[in-house]
Amino acid sequence: MKLWWLYILLFTGHSTEVSTKQQAVRILFFVDAHCPIAQYYLPVVAAFQQNYPTRTVQVDIISRDPKAHFTQPIHLPFQHKAAKSLIDAYAIETIPQVVVLDSMSQVLYRGLWDDQVKQLGVYQSKVHHAYVDSTVNAYLTGKPIPYSFTNAIGCQIR
Image: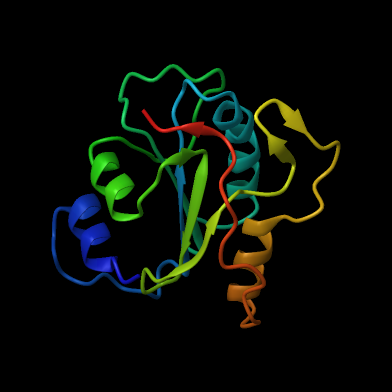
C-alpha cells in the first residue's frame, strides 16, 4: 500500500516528497483513551522510542480525540487532525494497532505491538514475539522482515 503522498499531505500540508535520508522508519500507533490495552502500551511505546534517534525511527500516536485523557503523559508526537484520514486509509478497526512504514511509506508491518496481550484483559507475563522491534531491527539492518501482519487485539475504534 503506497500512501506516502497521503501521509506527507496530511502531516506537512505539502504534497511534495520528503527526504528519505532523515528517517528510515515511521511508526503510526493508533490509540483511543477508552481502550485499556492502548493505555497499557503507551509507556511501552515511549520506552521503545527512547532506544532510537528520531531521525532513524519516529513514532506518532494517532487518536481522533484531541481532548483524550490518557492515564500516562504522552511524550511522543500526538496527531489528531489527520487521524480520521489515516484511520480510513489504513482501514483501522481495532485499537491499539501499529503500522510500521519504511522510508518510502510502504507498509512493512501492521498489527500488534507484541504478543503480550492475548485478549482484552488477558496478558502474558512476558513477551515472546516483539513484532515491532523485530520489524524495525530487520529493516534497519537490511534483513528480511520477519512479520508483515498480525490481527490486532483490543477495542473497536469509536
